Amino acid sequence: MASLLYYANMIRTQIQFEKKTYETLKAKSQETGKSISEIVRRSLDRSIESQECDQKWARALKSMGKFSSGLNNLAEKHDDHLGDRW
Image 1: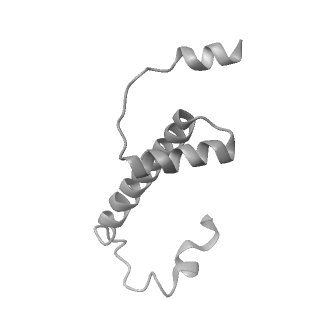
Image 2 (image 1 turned 135 degrees about the vertical axis):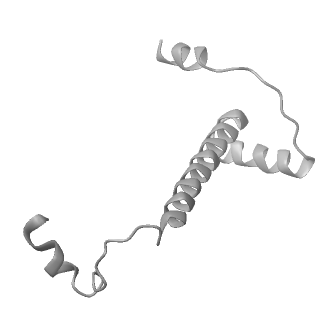
């Protein structure tokens, strides 16, 4: 029953590979016992997650230096300034 639910959320599509890529996928499929579709899905999911993570880091890095505490020695004396607040 769980597998039917899994496939109910799938959209069927078609994709074309270069011969070398297809042969590599086919070999990986035989090696792992997973379908080519499963290998491609998991690979795309990881790629998308990685890109989203990269975008988050880019936004974080872009914000560096844009805010000011008003303290000129915060880097050296952060423990003194934070005190028991943490």
